[in-house]
Image (cartoon, rainbow, N blue to C red):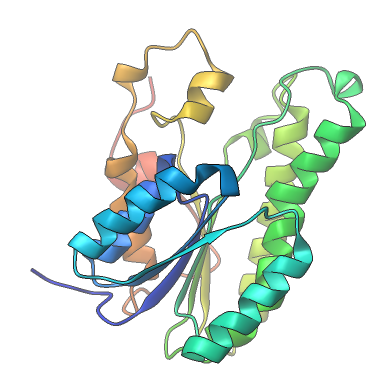
Length: 245
């Protein structure tokens, strides 16, 4: 079997379930060793992921952490440098949906969590891991956005605002990486069969949606050293040739 990521090391946030879990497994199957980040309360799911990745013959390093802890992200960068000296792939997948409600009804606490997890944590990851990605011969950074950033749909303001900010940040980072070997892209999954989607659209039939296993190969493609795409928002439905209903 072709292993386009043989010997490469990838860090995936939100790796305990959903898209993050599927991506971590797909990257491992393609030959990468995985640093899996998720909340401490997801320890059981992370340990199960570890078992599956080891069964694929790859290494898995579990890091239970709260992405709102910026100092922990800084320590993570230092630990990766001391142990491996570089990082080849960063997948910034973790996010929270927040409250689906009028902007004026979102609590200060919920707004802060949205910004901390969906935006600031990814900035801290860039800040901490950029030097490590530059040590790779083909560093790749992939962030997960949403069409909500552009539709301005009523009551989705909290989530949409953070995804719009994330896009601005990631695409700016891409331009800053033009003279390096780092390629930065974003993935817009569209409606996918996940727990977050079920929470956001509770009346929807999940069986009509693509699965996380279907989207994972897109991340493998963007993580490959042979991928020359940079500064793009890649829409999964377009990439897969799936028509939106």
